[in-house]
Length: 223
Length: 245
Image (cartoon, rainbow over all chains, first blue to last red; front, side, top):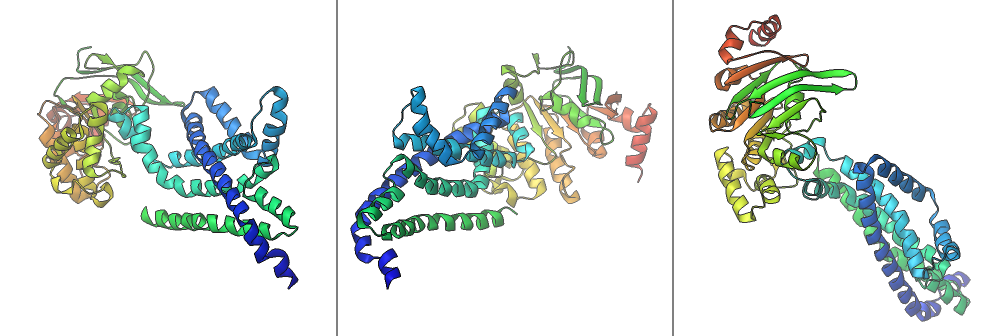
């Protein structure tokens, strides 16, 4: 059974397992930091795009469009390899985190914007008529309702961020994929790559399933 | 400026459409004014200008209790003094009925949750839905939702209450319960400006009735003047159309 020996070699998998777990930890750390920073950036961008002064709205929408059209790998290579030429030097981890945050912020911004725009105008008017200020209107009335709408697409986006952390292996971060390729080189056998694939799936499948559940649940609850 | 609410030369345009044409109106403190007229006559736009949900620019001017209505710091003060009840209720669907009433007093007036809760309970009792306090708006009938909306507006202890066709979105059998609550408010000292199609209510409760058409005030007078002896042809036509069927 050459196929089993090549791709599912138990001995190689067992030996590479500690390396893969270490990689998973880096992947989770990088993913979480980028997701949280991306959400904060996305919310700020969405609010600026919706309610900023005209020039601010324009700049924000240009940012969002650029970072949605720029391939993440290109952005990452620019940050890691090109920015040092203008004196900005960041470690692999922080380069990857910046790239992931800038892109996921742009996507989250569009999700937040759609969520906020789905809230009926009457909710804004009732808040204003009661004398709530802008911050109170957003945090007490609008965003709590928008969150319900945006959680499924934001979770989707977060899954994408975690998957995209694999690109960070090109800037020498010991994430799950990088560890797997190194283990593969050491063992002269690609089984660790399959191991990494299985870990990605085991880790992300529950999140994917949760999104489907939420979409069904929220979809059914509101009508 | 002699009214508690004073409106001077109020013009409002939507693009090329002249929605309000130089409106002048003074409403005294504690007065109940009903604004009637055909759809699209500018009645709703007029009262939505009073709390600046619709913007307007100089030389148009509205003054409430001595303070000019304009964007900026003073606007939130005015909005806290001017309550509004909407045609479509606009309750906050993610908050319980009680929380709907408590929110603004806590945030804007800085009341404690305990104070605001007690006040909410008292107000909900006053509008006859104390037993629904823990429910969410979507579990209430339209009439009950509108009564919650009135309680929510009252919780800010407003000096002026604006009603924007408060019964127009209700099933007919629920109109009465909302009008009853509104009647009970008239004469309590709160100034009420009510845009309505309920002529019976206007006749019974209003101190003054204003008839609007095409963005202008056509005629104003006591309910008796307007409903029994309308002077203007447009008022006569409108009342003829709505009363005789």
